[in-house]
Length: 512
Picture 1 (spheres, rainbow, N blue to C red):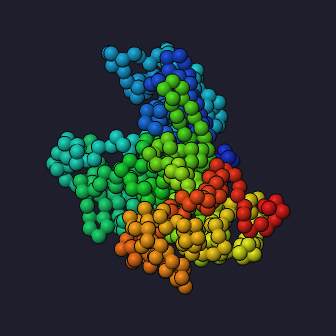
Picture 2: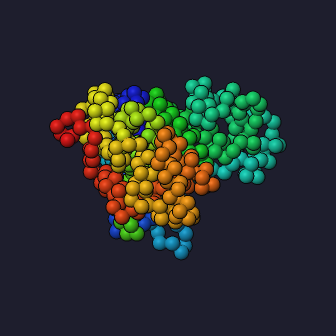
Picture 3: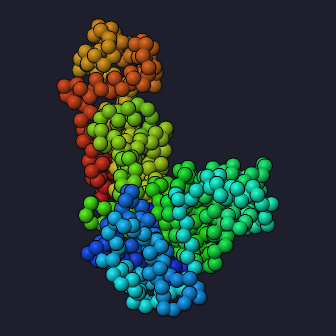
């Protein structure tokens, strides 16, 4: 689950990691230092002491550089000693004639296990000691070329008979079905001399030539998982490349299970809010770069992450109200910044708002919570609804709660305000009507017995859309000389700023 309320699988994964029952040394951190730096990074430490490390941040902050260094933290099983990390480094970090060479830096790998640390001196390309052995699998989702875009491989496949098929194991196939939402009967691959062809079967059989790039790449990830030994280090660059948001969410959850059952350590980069949000908060790392220095933050909230990886303004205020009328009043009364940060949830029955708000609070997504009850709701009713939830006093204070103005339903209160305070001219300008006609409409509406029909009747009389009419009435009421909605505006703004506002349902002394 998002945040700190973990699923059982997530709890087991973290527990096993903390018990240090690993076949190999695990990577605890990687540090870049030195005046010359490496690809512009002069001082940065990435914490990897966890089963899954999800690195996020804007383009160019160094995510790929860190992943490549993580992949260099271990040597292959049976590799000769002394350890020749320089050759592997120079294959990954290539410079050409007109580029400054990478030679004034150091990389330090710290391990969880028997090895303490290894320092790689970039000036002379030597290490302080041999790196530990461990299987490492590096996959770059964004750099994989689809098989149909590789002419040499296409020619080889066309000129050779089908090879032996290796099927994906059933457990992984079932997870692949859930992630991509496809009824796979099988997934397998054929190894040829210099290439590989992926095949799948759903309602019909098809090859990698007829897959989307995202499907082909994801099946390759699962093929590597199928082949990888227990306790391998998996490094995946841009794991969300080409994937739909809902697919990213499911992929993140299944990776937790895979990591748990196979004792993998996974270090990856992503720009998908959905993928990051599906992981425990303790698995997230945000990297930022201000043009000179790099900054690393662990266990970051989605509110901190979203502005760095998305054009969206993060939602941090959940407002629960009864219906569209209350929603229109709330939206019109706040400023643009608060409106962009706010999500309004219409709960229907007044008695359900507290339950909806409390349920969302308990998900621990970190939102500020505000309940806005209609003006005709009584304090005793709210107190009864809140008490039925058996909340702690801390939880009571976390649910801010206010009321719309007036002792009556909001539809009727808005019309009465315009009638009683000569608001016909303001509404006339909003509707593009004459003042006399609007006065006649308001007087007729004030006499309407059923308040739920007020905006329907006004829209019919004005020959306008009902939503436009409702917004016009709210704006006209806001602009009355006595400013009847200013108090509500102030209450919402205070909640958005992090203050608790409790104007109704005072069920404990601390909440009064």
